[in-house]
Amino acid sequence: MVKYYIETYGCVANKVDSEIVMAALASSGWERVESPEEADVTIINSCAVKEKTIAHMLAR
Image (cartoon, rainbow, N blue to C red; front, side):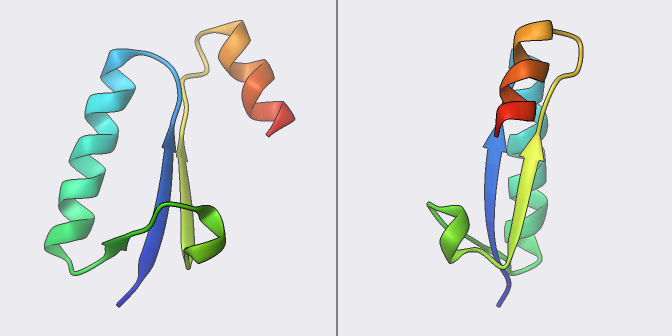
């Protein structure tokens, strides 16, 4: 089973998009974990529209 970690930044639409991704991964048997250290795959869903979000992602 593949373990994944997901972080979401930006607007409400991004949060909805992440929920859709999580549902698709769950239906494929992937397991969500609480930290990137536990994950086989890390997903970062970000909005490039807002300057603050871009700065945060670059610092990450």
